[in-house]
Length: 115
Length: 228
Image (cartoon, rainbow over all chains, first blue to last red; front, side, top):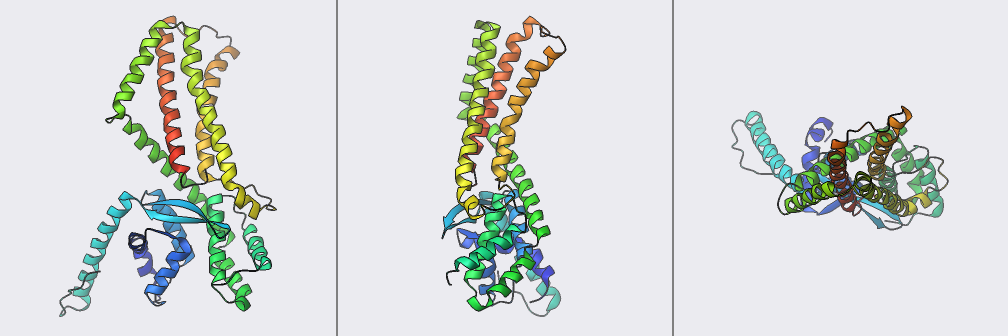
């Protein structure tokens, strides 16, 4: 999947969803998880990921903690209370958007799936 | 996953040092990213992969990450401080607030001016200075492993969180110094009317105590998760 704009628009939602499923994750782990889940179809670049993570941290959606792992310091990200709220809001918003998009792209097919 | 050789680790460090990163938060994140990525790549493609990472983490990108990090730390700490301040006016802390303001105001009517200044201004200031020293020592010990890894880096590695908290501990001390000493430069020694003595010292005490407590709570919270 090469359309970076589509990924960019949903990056926050992707991060929030991944962090909801796994309590805490570090930057590299997020890129690898997305790659694994989409069989390499979606690749999150470092240039997009880290600014997004830092912005979400500044907005109070994520909190960080540092841990000593294998002779180095690792920074983990975790959802805050407002991050959890934002996640469910973003998921609803994305579901609605995908369903509406389906109506436009395939008017004959009733969209019956949920993200 | 494989273990990187010491030569490979040295090459990674040299490569990261060239980016001029001074923020401990960004430096540790970039270093960990490099190590984790390269540990998962074959040994024979090490140099190509390192070059690929260098192209992603350019000097400009790292500087932008640092600048954004500083802004994000400020924003986060400021909003934490507002939340903590508001909490002093919600139950059960409100009882403490009322009791504290009441006691200070009552003491203000009993004590002579000089004792009030020493007690009401100096005690909270000493607490803030003490906090500053604790923050410096804690940061130093938390940054030790990272500084050891990048010991020959010419740029000083600092923690954005600690820098901002330290800056916040400095300004009440500076302001008090200015207020106490600046008027003397202009020959103003008794410029405060006597009837304002109590009001000013009590107000200063209340502000400084709340400020010191808020800083302490932010430090307590951030020290669990950040380089502070």
